[in-house]
Length: 97
Image (cartoon, rainbow, N blue to C red):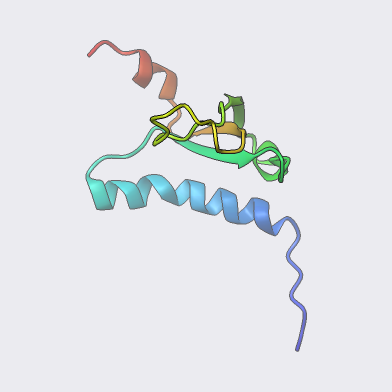
């Protein structure tokens, strides 16, 4: 069986899927997102692919999940990365409603 080698495969897949996200989302839900967000479990991964793809590290989670109603802090801490999907994302977020 031949071995297929694609340089920077993960980075290419991330780029292709991020570019496609707005189109698919608009088709499914009627509007396009302005930012993409992802969480990287810091104890297991370094987030290298997101750094290489110029995603912006904006902080860390606290270890609480969105369903943690009892303050149990049972989840691992994760890095939060954002990727702008629209050139004018700053103007969109700061425009008066």
